[in-house]
Image 1: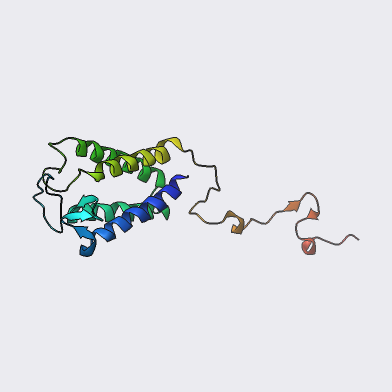
Image 2: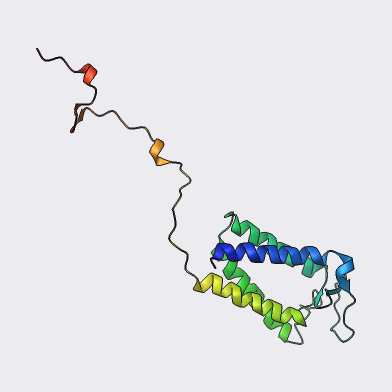
Length: 171
């Protein structure tokens, strides 16, 4: 999997997860034993598994949009993959710590979000650090070099003078 393919796939997945988090019908009430979250705009468990709130949903939308922009080469796909690996590894480790698993009460990072974030970090680290990009065609923004005009030649080696119409006729 190339980093560009990774950016497309994970961009679609996280954009889709963000859009699903905006649908109140797919959110079930938060589990009773979960840590309290102060930012309680649209809290719930997405599909009954992943605890989310509006801030968490916005982060998923931003990561997904960033991935699609990286796929379209507006941004570098390798930078996207490496950044996602670091961000989600940090979020996964924070979800394992009881004092940080709500990000100071802003968004829930516990439960199934831990393995989702750590799994995403592992795949992103592979795509960003281990996969080498194939040497492809290099394109420059300057344009096509084949269309550049050439200066007229005074004498062409293989065919005599450059413009035979301007040469004097032999006597």
